[in-house]
Image (tube, rainbow, N blue to C red; front, side, top):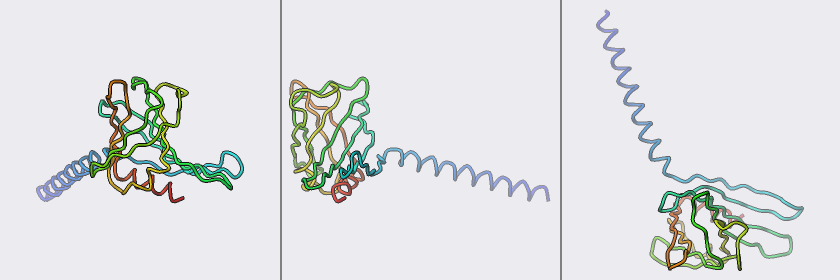
Length: 171
């Protein structure tokens, strides 16, 4: 009787260990995905902002806040922008310099810099995506932020985030 009880206990322990390893393995793969959420704000009566906001790392491991939004004014065409905010330790951006967007197919699109001379903070870039977003399909992207000397900071944008940006566009 005691032997049977120990066998059942051993099997349950083994099942718990295997289940834990499975969940740990799933957690590792899930943590590599970027998760954002679309929010809707009304800053002044009639003005509506649809926004997606998340954090992504560049190729050097520096974290950037990536904010994509559509601003709708009554009686005016909407505007669509992407703002990149570098956290401490990020490179200082030069303005005005366009953002290079490389699609998975290798096609390169250029988004104009909204800041004509300087940004409120040197680690902020904001780009007009009005003409860019209709050209994007749901595929991973590589954002190339220009630096002096023809160098770039590269940020990989997962397919799920591009899909979310398209939802913001359709709002």
